Image (cartoon, rainbow, N blue to C red; front, side, top):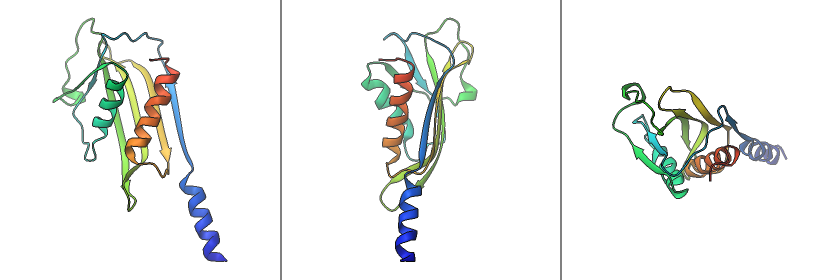
Length: 144
């Protein structure tokens, strides 16, 4: 009986995850907007998932060779910087995330336009978690 209770508790806790999206600045994104993903420590390839999801929506995406600290400020650019971090684990089937934070930053002044946060445990792979977080962020920001 104790064995089943432990399994039930583990399965219940495994599904306790939360995603929240916040919009700081109302901004219209037209198809001329380019999303820039700076180089970062990304051993499992989250940048590729972010790039694919944003490209799927019809926007241009560039993965940069510079890190966030090396990017030069430009004047009157429509570009959006993507700053992200995560904590990952391998759960015998695939990599999954226990924490994922992403911010969309105005390249001109580094103001946060929007942010999304994921934390908790999920049976989804890291790609599924990132896709779900981006979907929620884009829906909240009314980005097509």
